[in-house]
Length: 76
Image (cartoon, rainbow, N blue to C red):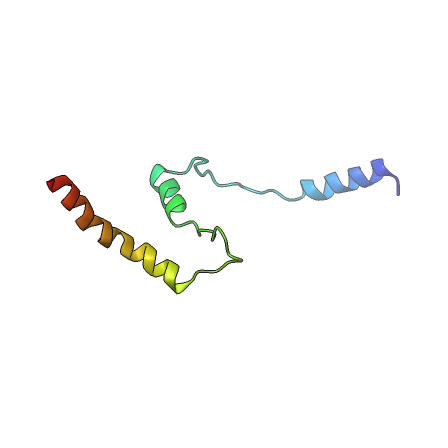
């Protein structure tokens, strides 16, 4: 079977079918884009190191410790 004969048979087979494509908007709404950005999974920057309990505690308590220090500095 040569290439031209194959193309003719393929075109005949494809012309037997008709497909109706529904009209849909190509652009996403702003709210949809924001939701996709907000709910995207986040990659862990250094997954091979893992997270230590001490690092988590220091990061979580840092704002609590800095808040009184800033008030004391501004009161002086």
